[in-house]
Image (cartoon, rainbow, N blue to C red; front, top):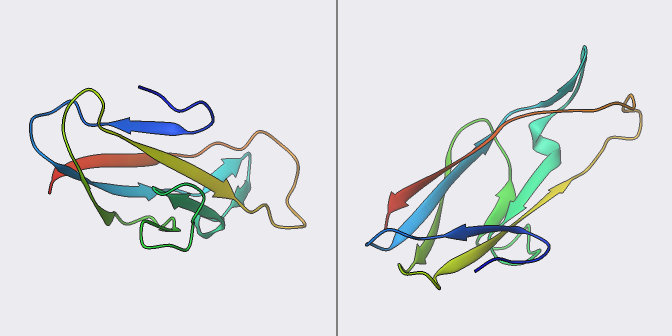
Length: 102
């Protein structure tokens, strides 16, 4: 099962799971966009809700309690606020998502 406009997390294991998430700055040549300008939400677009927040370089645990089975999915959305004076370019960075037992 997938969502059409967002990343989809699917639990194909055999236990309930939570997730940890972290990221790094977005970079282009010597320019960067700080990771604090990126937000995530495991509940639609509620980036300030209980299952969302500001990305950091340290793992943050989100207690999803996602059940297991082929139909057990959770949407993951991202938002990036681009600072006004950002140099145009193709910025890249890393996001790590780790499943842990609930």
